Image (cartoon, rainbow, N blue to C red; front, side, top):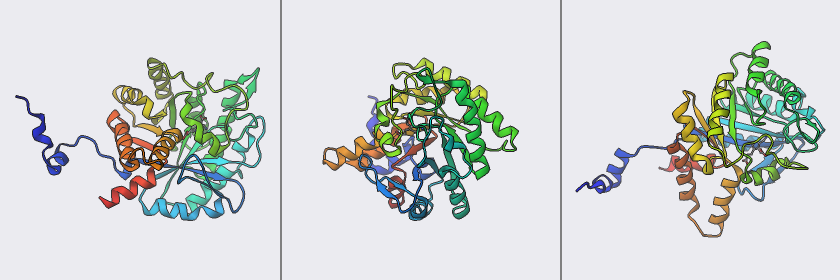
Length: 321
Ligand code: PBG
């Protein structure tokens, strides 16, 4: 008889044959930074996650560094929004201030910026609106201005999330032409129009005022199209390819892992975090185990990097073991 149970008998033999492990080296922690002072607002639908103003964020960063989490992904929440999202390329905007603050005070921490417009536009869409839709090519011009401004502030890596066609080529060219050829791009290459972004849109104040994002984000029904999206970003020079959300798209993570010789990242999004937190708060599941199991499933699917609101919690848990 084939007895597969032989290798499951004790924890030590299970350790020896374990195929995938989660480590703190895999994790990126997202941070919401709000313009203003004295702001420390817990996000109701994301227990444990807080919006900070820069004057209050040090204790959060101290913790991230003490836990040895390698990187943070920054989202800025500006006081001023307009039709174009012009604060995104203001050299003194909240994102640029945050990058300078973190690189100055926490030089070892790797700082990544989300490159998008939805938190900065009055209409909440990820670019400029013409005829009731986001104008791809007009938006590209502003993306170029935005990344150069982030680069001048000292960012380590940029992560464009707007799903505009040609955004990677535009960004690579803009960075190369302004003296930043060494800043890598992590592309939100395969990003779906997902219901799982709900809590994030509350947190970042970025829900679209009309319509939805399905003219630029992908249809959740499509798998082959994910390869097409990733192929273009790969050819345009993305250094890391990301799939987002993670849990409902593990097949896409595996597709990318099998097809591209690039590090693959996935984004364990706000709704995935909120579901586990809500069920655990009700005593309906063991939150810690569900957290570890879901993050492990992303590694098993092929993710090299996981962006997750659980990063601090996981890092603490791994230290205990
Ligand atoms: C767009 C952006 C979104 C998220 C990250 N970047 C939201 C969206 O597309 O509406 C979602 C992250 C999450 O849900 O945790 N700038």
